[in-house]
Length: 294
Image (cartoon, rainbow, N blue to C red; front, top):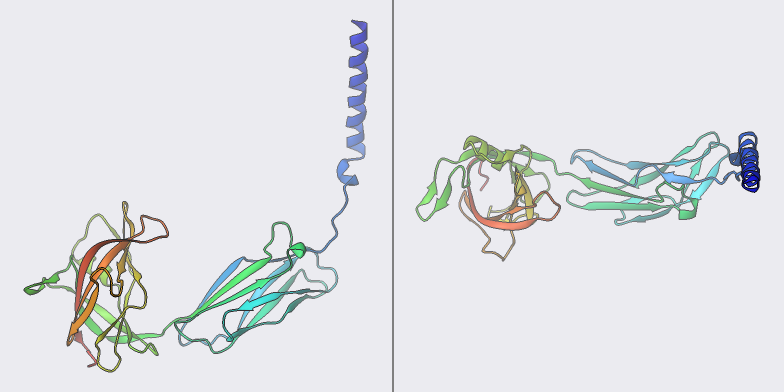
């Protein structure tokens, strides 16, 4: 019994010594200090959209370092998908500053083109939780101008069958893309159509336009700029709905008889996810009855 007490006493003494040692000469005082300068891009991705009437000459990309002492220069690996974008091979931090700006020069960018810049610094120069790479996405938007209006027909506001147009339709504005070579859009057609019809079981949102392309010389249908376009309509079961047009497939067709345009298309849905599934057929028609240009 005395032997066990002696062992316990020694153990407690050692523990006391260790405790006192930590409190007077902490292990954090003994740890090596990492004095190496590290860098990071402030953001991993940035997206810019330029209006059709706006001129953009440069994009400034921010970087940060973990000190403001002394000047330092680091290499930047810059990759651009188009000659309209360019930039230097390095960036410099001034003495007294922990931030620096890498400047991308922007030349003559065109509407309808996606521009991309990928900037990288060496991973061993990057702070532990920092970004060694940043991606810059740039696009120039069309300038849309008024181009009249149309009477729009869908299953909610009327449609077309063997006897012709059925129902009253709903008035929607048409806009033209300047420099778009026959690119037009129906302004929020599903929102106005289904709001007017008192659609139930769905949520509706303005601002989702349906773009279409016609021959700029005579107005004959050409097609659509993308396979799916968001309609501004959603439901709890199906997620977001889309106007879908697959050229040459699924019985899709785009035809006109003067100012009457008829579209056989589909409705797509995403079930709240990122991929769109094709759902069911729809027939859409519109009569371009105000300021028809041909």
